[in-house]
Image (tube, rainbow over all chains, first blue to last red; front, side, top):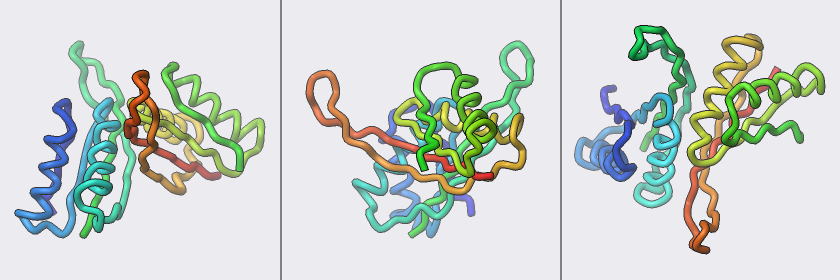
Length: 89
Length: 89
């Protein structure tokens, strides 16, 4: 399954459209929404908007929380929280 | 069950300590972490820090995403995403 939408710092609608395209044009059975750090809130916005406004029959199949270790600008390893929301038809 | 920690704009450790206190001092079986909007990312930080650093035996029992309708400063109704993370012993 490679239908993953990575949520970053763009406007919410960019990612909402990406998810809808995966389901409708690419005919995906499942779409994963992934985000890290502050973008986690936006990932939840994307999921809620897809489900409440555009694709009411989609289900939230799984939500996983986690921690990634990344190097910051000073080369220090820091922990950053992650979310993965799996939507399915 | 009234062991709910509402995550807002304070530092993560405030909420981490609140969750730990519920489990250890108040002897709670379950603790709910709730947040809205931008604080959602911080709620995930709280859960990850409690689980990875302080209480490794705690389990994430349930994660719910939702939408609240709130009035903004101009009296307009706007949608705001919510998260609820239930931790259990």
